[in-house]
Every structure is written in C-alpha cells, then in structure tokens.
Amino acid sequence: MTHRTITVAAAQLGPIQRAEPRAVAVERMVRLMERAHQRGVELVVFPELALTTFFPRHYHDDIADADRWFETSLPSADTEPLFAAARRYGIGFHLGYAEIAQEPDDTGIIRKRRFNTAVLVSPDGDILLKYRKVHLPGHAEFDPRRTTQHLEKRYFEVGNLGFPVIRAPMGGLSGINMGMMICNDRRWPEAWRVLGLQSAELVLLGYNTPSLNQEAGGFEAPHLRVFHSHLSIQAGCYQNACFAVATAKAGIEDGCELFGHSIIVNPQGEIVAMATSWDDELITADCDLDQCTLGRTTIFAFDKHRRPEAYRRITDQTGAMEPPVWAKKTGK
Ligand code: CDT
Image 1 (spheres, protein in one colour):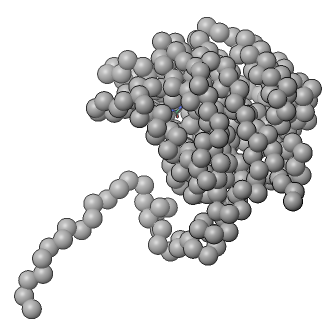
Image 2 (image 1 turned 180 degrees about the vertical axis):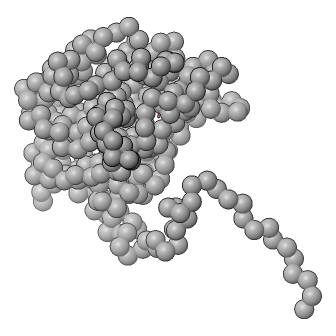
C-alpha cells in the first residue's frame, strides 16, 4: 500500500531581542534549515513575525516609525538567504513576517497597508500561498495598566485574503492541500472550519504567545496558557481531520516571556512532536496524509452531517446576545 507521507518540521526560534538585526535571525533560520535537511525534512514552518522581535509590544506614537519592522518585498536582501537555503536543500518553508503592501483600500485608493502575514514558499522559491492574519488580538492605544503592550490592533489591518487553501506539490508528493493561520487564529474554531471546508490536510501556523495573560482580569496560570494553545490546535485538527505544524517564538524576548511548546498534531488530535526548550529547536514528524481520510469520511464527513442552516448566527452575528428569559406559563 502506498502512503502519502511528508516529513515536516516546526523550526521554533528562541528570542530575538529588539536590537538584533534581521540578518542574525535569518542566519539562525538558515542553520535550522540545514539541520532540517540533515533529518530529511521536506517542509519547515517558522513562527509568526519570525524576522524580528515581536514588535507589537513596543509603542510608537507615529505608526510610520514602526515601518522598520516591516518588509516591503519578499525576497529582500535580508531574506534571500532563506530562499537560497530552500533551493539548496530542496525544502519548502513557511515564514511569518510583517508586510507593507501598496494596495487599493475599500475606496479604491492605493495606499500603504500593513498586515501580519505568512507565506508558503516552494523549494524553487515560488510563493505558493499568502495569508494575512484575521484575528488580531490586543489593543490599538497605549495601555498604562499593562507592563507589556500588545499593539497588534494598532499596527495591522485585519487580513483581507480570507483563509485560503492551495493544493501544491511539496516534498515527494504531487499535491498536498495546505492552509495557514497565524497565532490567535488558532483559538477560533471558525478559522479551522473554513480551512476544513477546503479540505486542508496540513495547516501551518506560527505564534508568539506571552506566558502572562495581561488581557485577563484575574490570574491565568502559565500551564493553562500552554494547555489552551494545545487544546485549540488539537481540537482544530481532530474536528477538521488535518495535521498542523504549530511553531512558536520562545523564551525571554525584550523582558517578556513567550511560552514556546511548539507542536505537530495529527488528525486524531494527538501531539506527535513537541519542543521542550525555549531556544532554536527543530521538531519533526512524518505525516501520512492518508490519516486524514478516516475523520473526513466518517464522523466529520461534512457533506453528510453539517447543517449550515442551523449555523446562521456564526456569520450573521459577532458578539453574543442574551437568550430570552424563561417565564412560567400561567393560565390554562
Ligand atoms: N500573537 C498573538 O496573536 N498572540 C496572542 C496572545 C495575545 S494576548 C493579547 C495569542 O492568542 O496567542
């Protein structure tokens, strides 16, 4: 029996400090690709905003002052070594980065637009798929109550590409259905289902998640932070019968702790590989994509069992509303 197997890696990055230039980060990433090649890896997944520190923790009064954290083209002089390594080793890669695009806005006027973006790149250096983060967490203005800011809503627009999936050759396989999400997206079942509805077999995702939840009114224990991340990814894979490679930036970055714990998950929702350091670390797994078939032909055969007519609220409504209040019927 033939199997559709691809060897994938999550290339977790240790911290990148604010003063560290892209070239140093890229050098570390190229070393991880070299290690991946030695282990027979065919696709490497790097984290969200992999080229720099997680800059949304730093406030710039004038947003244009943050432009130095963004890429205006890909490849660029700084990122070309990644593309060269991909060609040299015959490895595809996924890269998260901050993107500046010159694009028409809703009124049709071409202007500078900023997105939290990820691309999937073929071993030949072709950009196979681009995704722009939809669920932007955090806040838009400086928050004096927080010790660390999370200004994604200040620096990025909501992604305008939806959740695309592409079927493309990768590794030794002639076609794999691949989709992407970025960090906070993993907590939203809608994002997984939109990928599932396009038959995604492999979901690539990068993240930067602080161990301390400053959004919470109360205390959220660090182990629950990791648990919730894993829970979301494992549930997403199980309920959509797909694999996921989820790659963290880890460690103490600009004084802020990122919890790491990168994982690779199979369509049963099982973790098949997990990072154990807060450093640059490569974890790998052989993913037999035929394992996606069981879920999608049985319990999650969407065509047989989904009831979209009962799900109208999912797209008609954003916030939760209160239910009607029960009242005991009086009279006859
Ligand atoms: N980068 C990112 O999306 N991080 C969020 C934490 C945000 S806390 C304001 C996450 O969901 O992991």
